[in-house]
Image (cartoon, rainbow, N blue to C red):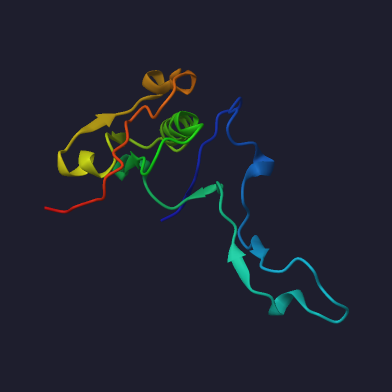
Length: 138
């Protein structure tokens, strides 16, 4: 059952105009010729935050895993995901998987909180660590 996300009055993350409305989509071609109809174009569902939430946040655990090589700004992404999930969507548990796939197999995970990630965007590398080797299931 869907329910509306409760947003705080001074919520800096999601302004009402940034929410995706039902029925919004992106079309494959943006150039049209005379007589061509938009209805016949290939469409993709637009990604982004919605005003309706289709899960109960207390039943959700979100895992954040970083794969591949170090990427500039990855700590910003981790920080914003944690803050958005915990403070806006009220997800009960947000977990960081340490050292990519290895963290899943070694059960090396870290419960992340907004306080914990508050300043990680000032650090280099990946806060969760990276393992560049392939995933090899045991």
